[in-house]
Length: 289
Ligand code: OGA
Ligand code: NI
Image (tube, rainbow, N blue to C red; front, side):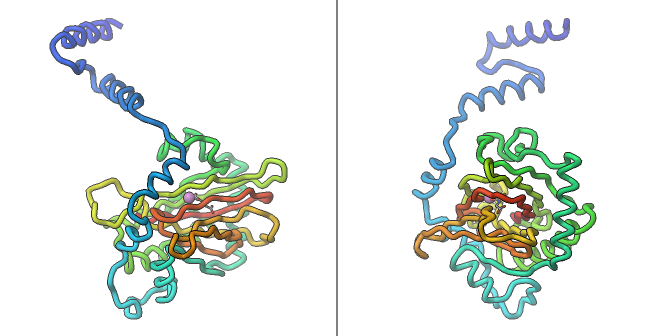
């Protein structure tokens, strides 16, 4: 208490001398936070997307991330040269049957156990949204957790047998940062329901980035999503809706979250959303920067 008082005195004295009050480290952090908050102008996701549209076509920006390499000699494990071409020209790619059905089933079971033991948290809440504290909490309904390499079971298997190899392929064709191996892995569970279905509003995962600003904040460059919903039927909803690039017609395209399906897209270019899901829906996402 006394200490606090004397600090306040000190800051009162120094206030007299300069503009920035003289705080302790902790107080100074708080002061900066307040200043930032005052300057923060909240804009909606829709406004943000409009603003981004006024800049260079994001697909053109992101296409500069691709290396000029002879694809056939790279020894890619998951992607074919045709896949790479598709990703570069259209900004997204869909692969089927990337994990066996038993792994899909086990991953779903493992996820449901984690949900029951409260290992996942509302992605829209401040508890797990430290990466994006300003996103409004009605934008999405999913429960998520970050996955780490010490994970066990089917989720671990998906990380090592799919995402690590996929990351290695991607690092050969696209300029990723030195630390691309530290991909962000997220498990997301959307509760399905007829009356209050799960969803994630239209958004983009990153700002367009062509790799020229190595010093800048590490933007996500690729989003890769693997679905483990082995008995998905049309009519269950929960499609991933993506917006194609303008030169491809700019139409939206709905992709069912079928087990074993992998979707890869340029994080800084492809707008997307999760449509209302009537059935529980599990996705594992890796973002490479
Ligand atoms: C995301 C996202 C889509 C999906 O987590 O950013 O857009 O199909 N997920 O789960
Ligand atoms: Ni997304």
